[in-house]
Image (tube, rainbow, N blue to C red; front, side, top):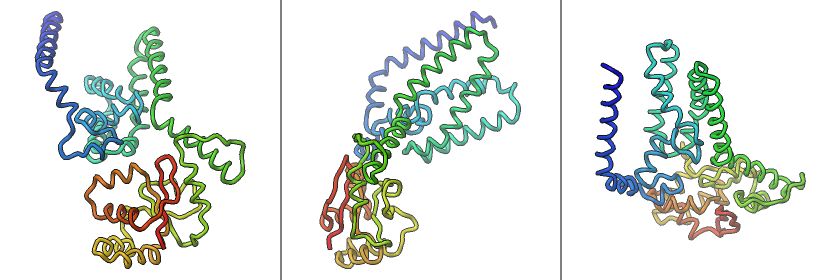
Length: 319
């Protein structure tokens, strides 16, 4: 079959596809922007997965299209994978094996770890490496002008990637904030400026606590800064396997035995303070879990808010 005929058939198929797609464009747009049934928007707003479009691009396909966290290079793995498949007969077995393991890993993450970018980030270094190696394998056989164009395009994308994505920003800001907090808390260093992303006031407040013994802990609700920036011990509120004192606390409190539950929490679990965030409290309110209800009730009825900074909250359990 002549190339002109193949081109004509391919063109007709593309035109038919777009004509068919355009007739349902409004319905598709409505569907993409509609909330996912069974998924509470307030729960997934901070994960950018409230609608079908976000659910697919930031969830199942988040490794490639979750630009906020992964940058804008990972999507190149898709066309490079298609090129690899089209030339698979020329590939060696070890290349096919690596491709198979990568695809299997992507599928596994898409099914089990799509809700959190941190799980998808485990494949980020490998994906970037594959993109660079596969891209180099393609352009090395091209002309010098093509190589220059590709290098310039990738360089621009890398610059945009480094400036606009979440992870590099978070690293720079928290690193700078850590230096500032260290200089203000310990008196070392010259930095004194404050950033709007780091709860320096909370850190200072925790480090200044005087009524905690060596065995006492702070119950942290998914706020790991207590381990990295303070001198106090922390206890994760969803820790598994759950200790017997915490299990008894979650059991007795909703049964009306609040005094006994709080006594166990303070004397056996050694919890005197609870560290949380506004967004975490909103998340716990949206979930129908007994443990969340107990913690929220404890914060509301049995704790005093002693410090609040940039969405972070430190509570002290009442005596």
